[in-house]
Image (cartoon, rainbow, N blue to C red; front, side, top):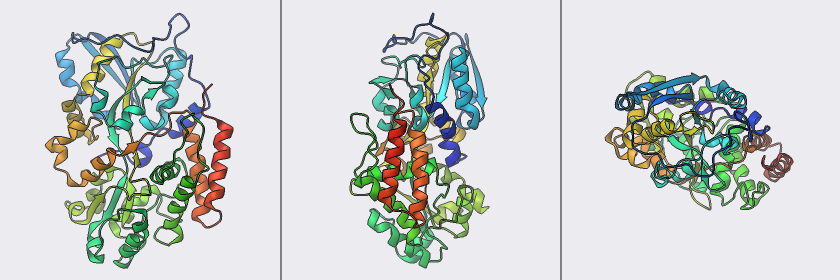
Length: 433
């Protein structure tokens, strides 16, 4: 599975943070091109024609030309022009193109960081009947909805689950933890079985750590925004989440000095660590790290995330597609997106790049269903939430990640960290109005 790394898959957050400080509303090709209404006319089944310019970030889209070959063959009067842009530059270049009126017809987005684009001056609403919203994992679909209007269609999906050394767990005589209370005892058992540290926790103290703690806050029954759109970060649930995360370090099952993210898999294979809270891409990468075919099957197991007081919820992330408001060929653009959303196309994308489908039905295909280590991720995808669809979330998550460090190192309290993040978030607002 040649899936992107965590920082590749949860990509573009630095660019998203920059974009979050800017308002994209009103950007387009001039006032003579009015934004579309909140609904778009249905897309028929006639052949797609003309040229469709598609922009995507390097990674999962690298194989897109090959995946859509059948669509192009069935629509001979259509030309699909795919432009791949490095991840770190993608959103910045897309924003600049939109502002200059030189954007593509179709653009790739990321559910975890697309909020600033969900506006009718930037994206066309998804036409009614183009796809069935209930065919997708709910949180992925919801991530593309703003003010009850859907602007993006999910493409591929991922979430986090527990990936652990099954051989060490067998040696220790323990099973995967199912609750927060089980976590540290499970980790300590893995250490007694020979692991240096049990958990290879990412120590970037950045947006990614902030997103982890947001996930734990949900598990503790908290929210990040109120129903009225106010930040709700200084809460008992957030304090519990920060405390829970810090317990991995203060108990000695994780180390504040490492591994760094790029070292996580080598540490795991060598036994320096025995568990990761991570995405499904690692399943296909560990044999290569171990330099031994079959190592993963005999050494690794997966499980859904242990439950807090409100269950085992995780976040949803992945890729999505949208059609720009000033696209010159929206009809063909939507037809292409509709094709990419078909279960058979999603399976083809999985076979080409190991991108896991956003359409739930595609997971029943034997190519995916026969991979037992993916079962935990499927179970977890059915219990996920979308991050707040506000443009400042990435900045808030980054601050949350930084506040976590002091608590993990024993230099601050979870209550103070939550209060600091709340104050910072309130100073930023939500990027609306």
